[in-house]
Length: 338
Image 1 (cartoon, rainbow, N blue to C red):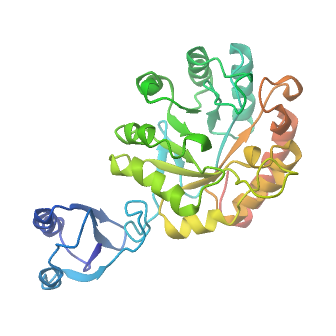
Image 2: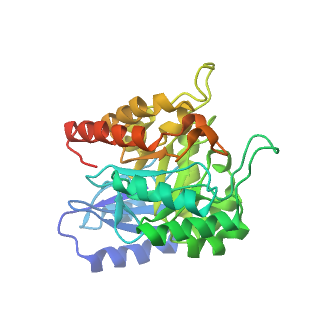
Image 3: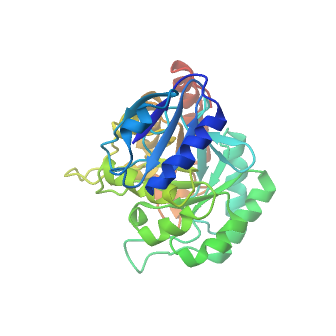
């Protein structure tokens, strides 16, 4: 349930109303937007006295939210949410944010070199994997804690904030000190125990859509994070599994406008994991920006032919520079910038 307040309603009145509403065993969450004030109710609202609510002179309207995701719902929060990674990188504003780096951290020299190159071309967030959940138990699983340390060193060298994947709730404290944004991978999108624990932090979480999950299931996973009090959630479309086998996954570009319509959370796209083919990264990234994405997460490697994971989808320094030039043109065409 969402209560829309009349223009000019004071914060004191909203606070008093929220206190009264919580007598019905629901959580009242006021949202003060640029033009609208709403009070969202989370929980079982069946016992809430709607007639008494409508007698409040400052209540404009009451809307029943049918969707199971409440906190992530745009009806609950009409204005776009902007999530800040590190000190100043804002996801969800007028700038399209590019997060770039290798699939896996392989060595100190590798990650620092990649970080310096992607920053020079306009990337503002460094991505890289320390723990790597792989389909095969025989594949490279990442450098783990050492890899996290190396990411942190690259961050200190370049000033780029870090986004990296976490797979185990027991690692949260370690990650809190060494990264600026948790990444929850596609395989862990419905790892609800992990989501609950991350929801207790206030560090940003980049949540990837599972390759066989619906939009509603995706937003319900975001709801787990937000129900714990962490509203710093970034949604990431990274391709879904279809009957097509030419590409690794099929990028669901339609998910971008759908998510932007249903939710107030920022949306980024991962064209690298969607296709799994390096030469498709550029056109898919361009399409994502045109569709309204707030950011991109792109894999870049200093030597893709000898990468320890996902070299086939990684861009070289030269191709990344060329791609960034084209992405700037697309961003300008839709009134944004990189």
